[in-house]
Length: 346
Ligand code: 5GP
Ligand code: MN
Image (cartoon, rainbow, N blue to C red; front, side, top):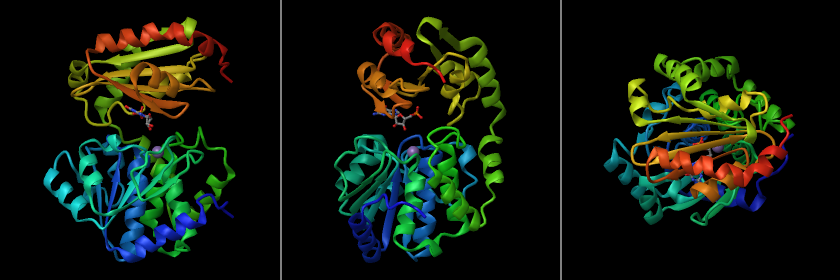
């Protein structure tokens, strides 16, 4: 049996909103990952089963290896269909905000959601949720928003409305936010949920294959290049850094999501407990941080790059040149020397 993690009054409030409203929009964070798309499409299928009119709106495009999910083609990408995205948000009676904790995480969609007359419900697992929704369901102790969506549906007593496609999306989100159940995944409840999803007819081996074995050739070549040429290891600090310029991404025909997951690779080096990936984006420098053990990457992100996130996975932005961001990173390492040397890699 599942523990009752979401408070009963939140479930009741949400259920009333779902009963009352028909035009529903689901929004999720910029550069959507597997959990963002999985939780959004999971909820989308469930609401469609209830006979609702539903749109998923994302700020920008998402990686090709998530596009096999049913409903992915119907997602409104605001970067491409700005008018349509704004119109559906404005016309919504109910908006679900999934997998983000602050309006700025939905970038161009934020002002529309902020001004929208719809009732808003947040379902998320990031720390420090902002106060921008009428109902906030925030559980940082849960490893994915997709798991929260499963719990949410079950607690409303509507498990029968979860079809196979819905179950596939939820599974994909749970899988990607735990590195295919290799971190944040010791809760027995996760496996109880997986068994329920399997009962719905999902093929978990096929889902793994769809997500992890369908990369572009350019991504694999780029991976080889960055590991051989662009990775710097700071032994004294148990740290690794990868940098990538816009020109290099272009050279490898980089597509959206082609660099996703690269930041994790150096943490598989013996003794490396902290890994950073600094990449030149369209109008800023994007910083991604990962750690093993208890090194607080979110503290590093907030102190040095005004960013944030979870203990072991966080990020930030820098407005300036790639070289400046790299210098900022390298110069910050001595400040964290104690913590970097203390953390023993298990
Ligand atoms: P990623 O490295 O996959 O882009 O981001 C990992 C996590 O770090 C995200 O789930 C999010 O919680 C956090 N994060 C990434 N970028 C930012 C940022 O610019 N600001 C804040 N506050 N958090 C970020
Ligand atoms: Mn997530």
